Each structure stands twice: as C-alpha cells, then as structure tokens.
Amino acid sequence: MTLHFYFARQFLKTVLSTILVFFVILFLLDMIEQIRKFGSTDASFGALLSLTALNVPETLYRILPLIMILATVALFLRLARSSELVVTRASGRSALKCLVAPLIVTFVIGIVAVGVINPIVAATSKQYEVVAGRLTNEGASTVSVTREGLWLRQGTPNGQTVIHAERANLDGTVLFGATFLGFAADGTPSYRIEAETARLTTGAWQIEGAKEWRFDPNAVIPEQNAFTADRMSLASNLTRDQILDSFGTPSTIPIWELPAFIKQLETAGFSARNHRTFLHMELALPILLISMVLVGASFTMRHTRMGRTGFMVMLALALGFSLYFVRNFAAILGENGQIPILLAAWGPPIAAVLLPLGLLLHLEDG
Image (cartoon, rainbow, N blue to C red):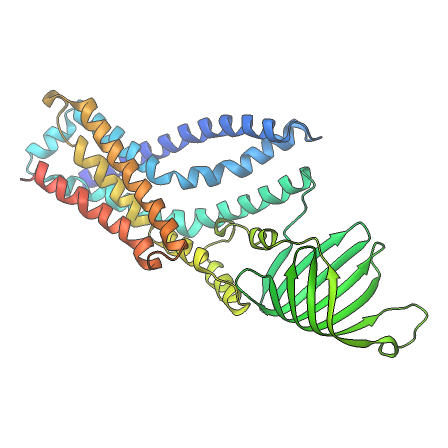
C-alpha cells in the first residue's frame, strides 16, 4: 500500500503541475484573443481579464484528456530515469499493478471533473456569453425553453414582442398554440394575438386561426375591439439560425440540469440529440481519461537505457491525439444521427481502453 500511495501522490502532483502550466499558457493566449476581439469596444483592461478568466476554464476542461496523457508520460519518464520503476518491476510487481494507483487517481479525477468542474465550467461559459453579448451589443438569448413550453423574444426600435408556444417543430419555425404579446417602446402592452399555428417566413410570422386584442387606452374592455382572422401576418426579425443558435451550446448547461433540459426540449418539440450526445460524452469522460493514462504508460514504462525514448513518447502522443480525434469525430456522427448516441459516446473510450491495455500486456508482460 505504501508503494501505491507513493505512485498516486506522484501522479497527482504531476497532473496538477501540468494543469497549472497549461492554465498559464492558455490564459496568456486567450488574453491576446480577448484584446483582439473587444479592443475596439469600451471594455477596460480589468473587464478583459475577467472575460479571459471566464473563458479559459472551458478550454482547459476540453483538453483534459490530452493533459492526462502528457502527465502520464512525464511521470513514467521521471520514474524510469530515477530507476524507481526498474526497482519496482524487479521486486516482482507487474506493469498493471504499477498502474493501479494512477488509474484510481485518474478515475477520481474524472468523477470530480464531471460532477463538480462541469457545472463550474458551464456557469463560467454562460457568464462569458452574457458579458461578451453586452460588449458587442448582441443581447441575450432570444429563446427559452421551460415546462410551460417555448418562449421567444423579438425586438425592433418600435417595441418588443414576446412569443409563447405550447410546442414547436424541430427548428422552431412552426409554432403550435402560439401567443404573441406586443409591447410599445415605453414598455406598455399594445396587442395580444392567440393563434393555432404560426410559421416563420422571411421577415414575418404567417399566423393561422388567430384572434387579436388591441389594448387601446380609451377602451375599457379590450374584448370590444377584438377580432378573428383565418390568416394574418406579423413582421419579425428572427431567423431559423437565430432560434437554433439561441439555445446555446450544451456545455453551458450543468450536467445535473441537462436531463431536465433535454426533457423540456423534447416536450417543446425540438430535437435534443446534440444535448443527449453531450450528456453521454460527459458521463464517459472518466473512461476516456483512463484510456489516456494507459496509452501514455504503454509506451513509457520502460528503462531509458533501452533507447528510443523520444520515439516512444512521440508514438504515445500520436496515439493519444488520434484517439481524441476519433472520439470527437464519433461525437459529430452521433449529433448528426449517423450512428447511435450510445455508440458515439461510449464506443471510442471503451475501444481506447482495450487497445493500449492489449499493447501494454504484450510489451510489458509478454
């Protein structure tokens, strides 16, 4: 147990050191990007620092698998140079037993990353979008999905229109059971439209089965001026792409809230395939991290006197980057519906575990 604790402690120190190095590098690079992006606005240097601090955690979280393989390579190269690994192997311990402690630490890191760091990253990413939207005057999201259905907002210099629908089609361009609430520039309500369906076309909502109330200050009862129409048109500056983009990326939603959000999306009539894929990708993250440790260990658990150390390190990094690319490519296929979501999310990590495990058994234990 003493040896296991020693390996676990050394591995944890290496991982934290690697994360710190990458954080500093990413912070400096992202700071330059924020200055380039918002330098023309009235944002202060402190605001740019805040934007950088909000944006870096997501980038760092996304490259966590690559950080793990680099930390693994650094650890075992150091143990090999100090001959600690040789002494351990000479005492009768197999390569797999030497990996027990690092793998346990990796699994714990994966659980913490998914359960704790993911909500933090989601909060910082969402706040970054809000602050960046204020600086560029793009405004906040125009879409909100709740248990009551779908809410949209469209605005012009003359006023705002709030739209509620019980459900919609997959891209939000056809609304069912829709309600349009119009507000004047000073915030007072001006009209209300109840419609059976509303279809978004270029520059307007084409409404069918509508009833409209005009809120005239001189009218005591709005119902007196209400009228119905089989078809009517309402100007709109919304587009299909704006509606879809306003949902935001799944990474801005904490994993604990993601299942409920997926249910709300599907209840409103939207496709939640992207969010489902992201959820399973996050749940499979601990397995992916374990696979990266196995990849790094399979090429570096050897004495440096055997030579070709640089070549073996390059092979480890190449295989790790390849597996990371395959995983992201499978996620794209899952989001597009080309392959099942479970296969896209869990297939690459499991295959990534089995491949280096077989290689490790072949190279180290015969």
